[in-house]
Amino acid sequence: MKKRIGVGVIGLHNWYHAYPFGDYLKKGTNNLALVAVSDEREKYARQFASQYGAKAWYTNYKELLKRSDVDIVIITSYTTSHAEIAVACSEAGKHMICDKPIAATMKDADAIVRAVDKNGVKFMMAYAIRFNSAYARAKELINQGAIGKPVSAFWSIRCPVSYIREAPDVDYPGWYADPRKGGAGGFLDHGVHFTDALRWYFQSEVKSVAGEIANLTYKDIQVEDFGVAILRFKSGAIATVESTWHTADWYAPLSSPELCIITGDEGEIILHYHKSPQLEYTGKLEPKKGRVYLDWGGDERYEIGYKRILEYFADCVLKNKKPIASAIDGRAALEICLAAYESAKKRQFVTLPLKRD
Image (tube, rainbow, N blue to C red; front, side, top):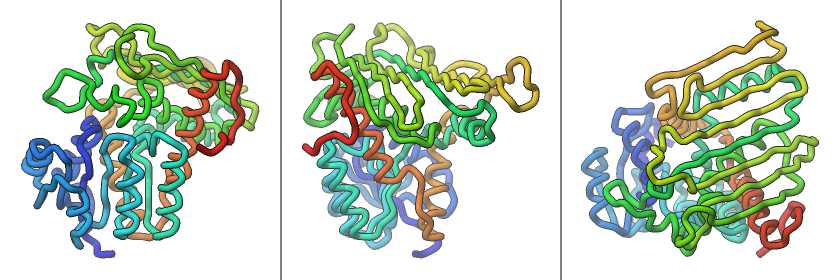
């Protein structure tokens, strides 16, 4: 692998993530250069290439994969297209950073895992939480034994459907609310972030899931605007995950709460995304009494996660290291969420692993 790594972006549908990646690539993130972009919507492919300095744009992603100067592909297309694109990237020998969720079905997730293994390419989920300053610091505290053994967690996010938009210049959800493209709605959209992070924090697999899925506010969309699940881990820990799009339309996304509470048998960590301080901690480390408050500003507050993903994955490619947040991790996070949907239908706890499609 050459020292200068060429990057291609396939699909601008999840533009909330594609554009921050483009911004950091334009700024000259280590060893990386944006080479090409593909989206079936010519307007957005052309605009992205111009805005972020790509050499070429395409409406057929297979043309991008023919380029010998593309080493890494960032997949930010709509969810149900991930498997087809990831398999094609694998067969073309391209390493991949894949947006969440890995897929919409276990069948597609398994196809990605097999293709990556068969073709020996590197694959990493773009789980920005793992690279966000506040959440990464929480992981460090847990690893240091600061709160003892993690025994429970609560994670919740709420934002309005009006904030979920198909492209930066439209005011409708588009593919996000189309089950043929998104696979599901408000619960899956962010839920996979949290199920992945909880596996990461607890260092344990989930053994069973109970879920409730509903349309509480936006009853006219084809997918759910609310989902909540109780996860039972093999370690004995229990967590609740609530992921929704059912906040009132006027509620500004940056003031909508994302709250994570991780409780150990000797302390507690509270994370407030969008609020200050972002992290509160009390536990075994000094000072042992009272709370420690930590906050981050500027890019360090959130956007830096995209830069760190790029830098970390480039290092894995250059040094032939196995990346964290692998296809297996993406598959596991999806399986937990799909178990919640199955539980909601069956009205009972669902045991993992799920039966195959």
